[in-house]
Each structure stands twice: as C-alpha cells, then as structure tokens.
Figure 1: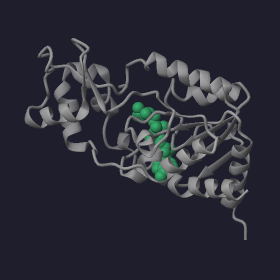
Figure 2 (figure 1 turned 120 degrees about the horizontal axis):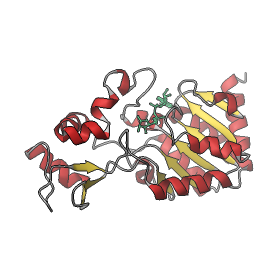
Figure 3 (figure 1 turned 90 degrees about the vertical axis):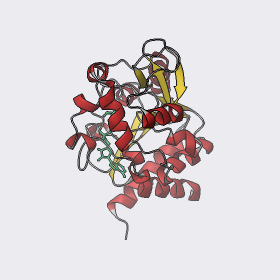
Length: 252
Ligand code: APR
C-alpha cells in the first residue's frame, strides 16, 4: 500500500531527478538528529531561552561573559553528521545539487563531505576579536574560556572575542549572501530541509528562487511558512525522509 509519504517521496525524487541547477537550503532541523537542538516549534531552544539574552549582538557587547558562559554549558563539540547530511552529499555527487546554502553554523555539511557550502549565518568554528579583527580557531578560545570566562584576545587583550556566527541585530556576511542570491536566481529546484523559514533575510533566499521560477521541495518535521508555495512538502524527520528520496532516485 502506498502511503501519502511514499507518494510525496516519489514526487520529491522526480523533481530532483529533473533538476539541472538544484540547490539545498537547510536549517537547524537537519542537525537535530546529530544532537544539536533547533530553535522554534516543539522543543525549540527559544521556548526555553530568550534569544535576545543569549544570541543578540547588543547583549553580547554589554556582557560577553553571558554568551561565553552559555557556550561553556551548552556547546556540543562532538556532534557528527547524520544520514540527512550524508544524503545531501550523495545528491551533490550525483549532480542533483550544485550547493548547500545553510543557516547552520555547526559545520556538519562540510564534515559530511558537501563540496560547496554557503554559510549564511557564519560559523561557530572561528572566533574574531571585535577590537583588532584577529581570528582564532574555536578550539583555542574554548580552551581559554574554560580557564577564564570570558576569554580575552591573545593579540590585543580585548574582551570582545566572538564566534563568527551572525547574532540577532547583525548583518549577514556580504559574500555569502551574494553567493546565495546568485545560486537562488539560477536554481530550478530548491530542496529545503529542517527550517521553519521564519528568519529573514535568510528565508528570502528560497523565496527569491521561487520568484525566479524554481520549484520548492520542503522536508520539515512541522508545517513551515512556505508550504503553500511548495511543489511538495513532507512533514517528517530529515534523517528518515532524505535517504528514502535518494534511494528512490538511485533506483530510477
Ligand atoms: N528533521 C526535520 N525537521 C526537523 C527535525 C528533524 N529531525 N527536528 C526539528 N525539525 C524542524 C522543526 O520543526 C522546525 O520547524 O526544523 C525546523 C527548524 O526551524 P528553526 O528552529 O526555526 O531553525 P531555523 O529555521 O534554522 O532558524 C533560522 O534562526 O535562531 C536563528 O540563527 C538562528 O539560523 C537560525 C535561524
């Protein structure tokens, strides 16, 4: 018996098989099965923590210690890519995807082997000093943070060391945004995975692609703000659904 999901998986596979300039657009939901929590909806971090307190540049500048204490207690350093990340690598290697545009800062797409990753919200693996612009690997600053929180800049002694993640109130990295817009305008299919699509300007990327004629294929555990724009929307776990889509494509 064919379930609704089977039919939707077949539709998603057919869409990707026809793709000549497909891209993926991912959010926190794709890393949930790697043990990294998402932000909104059921069990999201922002239902427990005030994003303004722990993830806004104004609060960071007022008191960097709050950010680094939160990091000390919550940062996952041992997370590994899951089946959903690996499925996107397969699709890229098969030519169904040209690139992965991500809102995630966890580096798991690169760790899984994705070749072309655009990080719209920066990376949690690099730290910059807001005073002297010196940059340091996160591991080095985490070590310092364990010894003395908040860590000070080894180059200028300043106390504003910040991961290159984009906090609320900050602009997106210009180059990444431009690359994402170029990919979106040329895309014929956008595979959206694990995002509530509520945060702009990032959510403007799949919208831009749609406005330029791309078909949207959404895989998300809960309904998203763009389901009505999608050719197919599948509500389920990315680590369960995406491998099914890849299997369907490899069988065809
Ligand atoms: N598989 C698929 N989807 C999942 C899974 C899963 N295993 N687990 C959760 N989800 C869904 C949730 O239902 C939610 O709708 O993933 C979605 C994640 O949405 P958000 O938590 O809003 O994350 P995201 O869209 O990436 O947020 C955008 O907001 O907080 C800021 O900078 C942060 O980059 C982030 C941005």
